[in-house]
Structure formats: structure tokens, C-alpha cells
Image 1 (tube, rainbow, N blue to C red):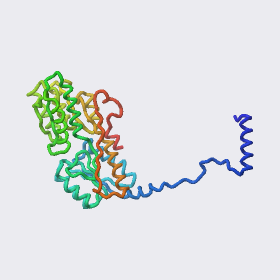
Image 2 (image 1 turned 90 degrees about the vertical axis):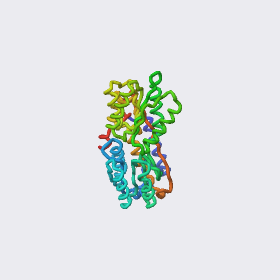
Image 3 (image 1 turned 180 degrees about the horizontal axis):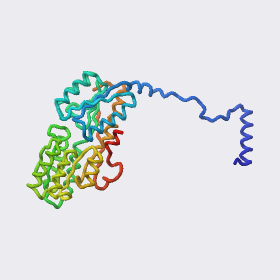
Image 4 (image 1 turned 45 degrees about the horizontal axis):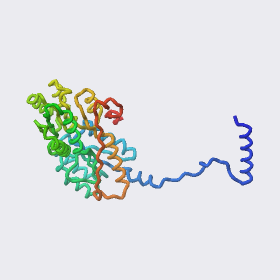
Length: 341
């Protein structure tokens, strides 16, 4: 209900407005402004193709990146095409070669090692194709790299194992990935950085399981039989270290042998396994964030005046340590099925 004083005020205001010729229409009743940059942005992306070459599909990392790229880029009229080498380095090199001939706007590459694709990626950028490398880089650094800092991962996983081993046997094992892969070679350097400060730690085994869970399990079984007082294992990928954890469990040493690893942070591969006690520490490089970073970088590059290969930059992922303290907190990990929706 409007009070008497309010009515008087409105009447006076209306009278004054009439005398002055002022309209009391709402201030927002005016024409909008056309944002001048969104149209060329859309035009730069519309109809463009992004080629995606992982080491293989059908596991959380590569499926997650693909799902995010599609979700972030396709609404702008872009097309994301995948070329799956299925763990074959030769097939991957052929896939990159074929994509170069097809001239997509950008190629996202997950390198199996530091050398195989190096010259091909350089060729792609010379031919006007932006190249974004994800997680495992080559010896040739392209316009963009999005991925984990493997040296940091090696250091943090090893520090956790060393801390756990205090007052125990000080015997640890290292289970590497593929020796020629950047993720494995750089992680090993991080491990070495920490061990150089702890001469009391004895490495009883350092072997490559080639990202294979069955090989990791076999290596861990042998090491545990030979060293039943082992206090820690530094693994290089949780998808592989499922085998490592299985060997520890079969030996009845879960909780007595500290298992540290890393991965993309998917619920089943990280949080669930940490909660079960299979892993004591899983450093997540958070695949959804990496996918969004790649998509944002692609959109920015295509809408800029930058030429492929003329600039080079890196976006190292902020790591999320998954432990029993946060493994059951919603948001610590992500679920692949949700990304695909």
C-alpha cells in the first residue's frame, strides 16, 4: 500500500517532470550495443577441425580429454576427430602424417615418446597447423603444451614414500613406465632429486613396466618376495599401478608398504582406490581441467593473429594430492561417465 506521503511525492515529481519535459521512463529503455569481437571469434572457429591423436583410447585420460574437447569446441561449429593408434607408435606416426595432409586447424598430440613425432610436429606447424601437446611432450616444443610437471610428481611421490619409511627398513622400489616416454624419464629425474638428499634410502629395484598393469604386478611380486620388509613403492601411473597395489595386497602388506602414484584423477582410478587402501597417495593432474585448458588455448589461438610455431608456451597443471583425507570428498575426483553426457 502506498502511503499518503509517497503519493504526494509522486505527484510532485510528475508535475516537475511535466514542466521540465523530462520522461520518467525506466533508464534501461535504450538500444543495446553490439559487442564487436564475438562475431569474428565465432567466424574464426566455425567449420574448423581439430585432430586428436592419443597413445590409445579406452582409458580414463584419453577418453576424458576427448570428451572435454568435444564439449568445449563443438558448440562453436568445430569438429573434433580422433585417430586412435591403439598403443602402436608406427600407427600413431601414420595418423599424424595423415592429419597433416588433411590440414586441420589444430592437432592435439599425446606423444608415446620424446622422439617419434618430433619432426612430424615441426612439419605440421610449418604447414600452418597449430599443435598442442598433452601431458607427454616430444623433444620438439610446439605452440602449446598442457600437462603435468613430471619432475614435480616424481619429487612429491618420493618425498611421501621417504617420510613413511622413517624408522622402517628404508627399502623402496621404483616401477617406471615406458623408458622412452617423457612422463617416465622426467618423473625418474624427480625421484632422483629427492633420493640424492636421502642417502639412507636404498632402492632395491627400479624397473620399467611399460604402462602395463600385469607387468607392474609381476615386478612388484618379485620385489616383495625378495624384500618382505620393503616400506614403499614409487609408481609412475595409477592405471599401471593397479597391478602394483594388487601384488601388495596379495602379499598381505597393504598399509605396510606405502604406494605412491599419479594419474588423471578419475573416481574409479584414483579416489576409490585410495579409499580402499590400494594407493596411499595418488597425485591427480585433473583431466577435466587439462581438457578445458586445451580447448581454451585452441579457441584463443584460432581467434588470434598468431601463426603456428611463432610462439611457444606451457601450461603445467596444478596437482591435486588424493589421500584418505580427501578421497571421499565430492569434487576431489571426476567421473568419466559424467564427462561423456
